Amino acid sequence: MDSIRITGGKRLEGKIPISGAKNSALTLLPCALLTDEKLTLANLPRLADVDSFGHLLNGLGVSTSVAGVKKGEVGRKMTLQASEIASTVAPYDMVRKMRASILVLGPMLARAGESTVSLPGGCAIGDRPIDLHLKALECMGAEIEIAAGYVKATAPKGRLPGGDFSFPVVSVGATENALMAAVLTTGRTQLFNAAREPEIVDLCNLLVAMGAKIEGIGSSHLIIDGVEGLHGCEYEVMPDRIEAGSYACAAGITGGSIELVGVRPHEMLATTNALAAAGLAIEFTDGGMKVTAHQPLRPLAISTAPYPGFATDMQAQIMAMLLVAEGQSFLEETIFENRYMHVPELRRMGADIEVHGRSAIVKGGNPLTGAQVMATDLRASMSLILAGLAAEGETEVLRVYHLDRGYERLEEKLSAVGATIERVSAG
Ligand code: UD1
Image (tube, rainbow, N blue to C red; front, side, top):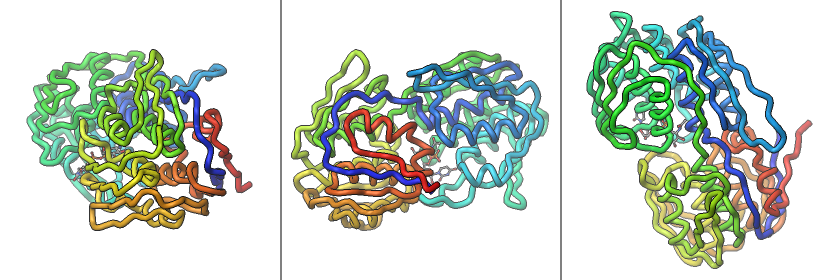
């Protein structure tokens, strides 16, 4: 298995191009199921999860073709076409590899009148149930059956009538599934307490470009009037605000200055506010945003929350950055239980962090030293990369496949701003 080797202590300076958003890509791709016409998605990140989603869609009868990537181009363009739905079953083998596979449930049900998806099961950052996905679809008229590890959703009359659902907890994935099912219903659907993440707005914008009728985009009250059919279109995936935030933390932890090219600063205000509160200078540029650290950083108190709050997907990276702050920081994780699995590995590098349930106290200022480390999820792995950039000596981050799921050309992007980092192939 490959690993990433870093020699820490370099101040990072330069520009990093931000890729298309992984979490947006994973909800835009299943929209291909909603029409028999061609859907072309541009600025797709080149990530393992995007490839896996393509394979999952291929198995359902969706053809995919990728346009040649021109030299210097970051993203890629994929054209998808579901002329017919060949199978309405997303098998265990696919769902096991990638939880986001559950996002075919809603659109496949809307298009084919039925949809069977393997239950995702547990995952490294907590239980992550799908009850809200199912309840929302039920309120829109779906019949749900669970048997032999699979969930089967059926529209009794071929198409769902639509209906109202109020989410008791904000869920990004359940909002996405409900939206994709609602656009082809025979009636009106209202979603209350819907997620408002920029990736949801990206999904709504694509659906509208395909002919859907959605009001309240960007708010927690979405009103969807079903239409007879949707058409194809070409659409560009939004920039990845979590990737951008991660590299901003790289500037912070190395006392560096990085311009995040292509980022949309207004979509990551909670992160930029936190960085500014830690003492980083934020400058909006023509190309995006420049983040410059004047160490020592100040400690922070942060609680994760649904958008527009501080993203849980940034918690591990900001924690790593706060290891170089002067004083004690307090973090609270409110979205997922069990999302501090990077802590024992960071401790092995010299970090002083206490965890009490969902809270963590980060005592900044302890010198970090390189070590062999590994993490069990994507963002946790990134926190180890960040710590490695600041640590004295060599750090080797194992289980690189987690990083390949969410960071396009990580080592190339970091080398370009002065990091000593390389991928070591296990052969
Ligand atoms: C998405 C993101 C993930 C991010 C998370 C929260 C993708 C592919 N993944 O995950 O990177 O960390 O949003 O911003 O976009 N819940 C239920 N029942 C459900 C669904 C969720 O109880 O049916 C709970 C979860 O356990 C969690 C909370 O709701 O505590 C939020 O989860 P959710 O927003 O659904 O996360 P995902 O869509 O899985």
